Amino acid sequence: MNRLIDYFSTIPSSHRSIILVGGITFFWLIESSMPLFNFSYHKWRHAGVNIFFTITTIIVNFFLAFILLQASDWAVTNHFGIINWLPKMPSWIYAILGLLILDLIGAWFVHWLEHKVKWMWKFHIIHHSDMQVDTTTANRHHPGESAFRFVFTTIAVVMTGAPMWIVMMYQSISVMLSQFNHANISLPTRLNKVLSWFIVTPDMHHVHHHYVQPYTDSNYGNIFSVWDHLFGSFSFKNPKDIVYGVDTQMDATKNESIASLLKMPFE
Image (cartoon, rainbow, N blue to C red; front, side):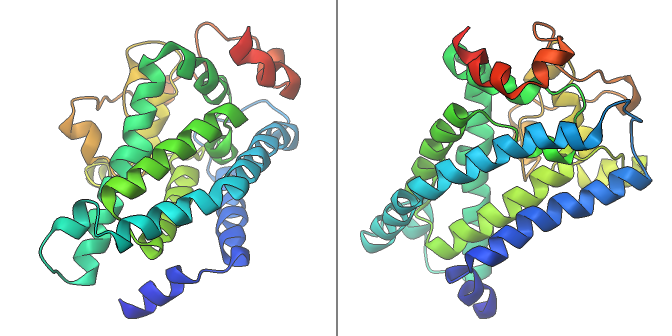
């Protein structure tokens, strides 16, 4: 455990880049060999749009990263946050609790809010407008959404009281799981059923990208599926019956235009 703590305390930027690029490449190759849907689309052009928004997310997070560092240092120094108020426990228990709380506040809760608060939904709709969901969709977020998601991540860090090694571990796992659960693949039914009680699987998250309600407002999780089971937002639909997109934004040309997507929240 000490090796993990040391690694994530000082994880190089190059390693974080490898996790991002390597994950996309890995799941992209799997999609090509065993796809859930055989999309009739230009895979590279589609990826180009989503990678543009991946880059804007990286830029937003890069310029705001010092805030996250200050928030974590403040919480640890002032003994603030849930895991700092608990009795002394082994590091691996702190890590699991930290990951769970960060995932609840920094991923599940803000995602749920984006579907309930109109102005937030206007930004989040860019993510849902993708009509060919694959692993590159994971980071298809409007820069405005990236900014307010960062705010909730910072709040989550303070409320959790997470040191930076837990924050870096959480962000690394979050990136990989998001690429996994957006990937255009389907797991064997039995394996998916078991895994979906613990983590968010592609079959589970693809339901969230179905174009109509109530499916769009379900399965908000990113890493852990426990929150959707606990809060009653879990739903299931046969993966082959899913139609991606949003019923109010079904113009394929517009949904693949960077300029149109950037303007979409303000229309």
